Image (cartoon, rainbow, N blue to C red; front, side, top):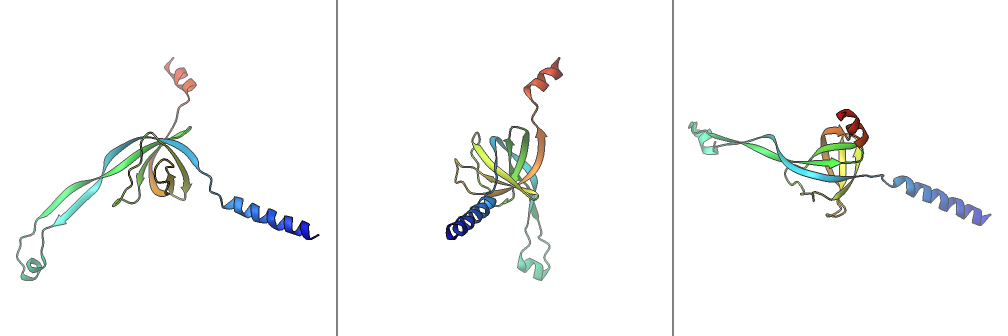
Length: 139
């Protein structure tokens, strides 16, 4: 009776452990491009100029660029951008990546890199056409 109870506790514990495992999909990082994602503006106002009222204000505006990666799976091609815009990690293009969807973002890991999970925004998705469907459409 004790062995039956011990086996059932171990079985329940193993089932709970298995439910905690996250399922990942795999894909290949095909390319990385820099795309315009906004503007950065710096003002030339100083504290003294604000207090004294001198009108020496000038501002500098420049475009900011973000990394955009193309991640291809067997069914979908994803265009993704890192959520951390200040310190984006540079991913190795041509390598396999593992990812999972978590609410409105993609959590990505690259085993060949540092194998850390990072959050990415999905900005575009296109289905991958099967080779037979491409041949049929060209006829």
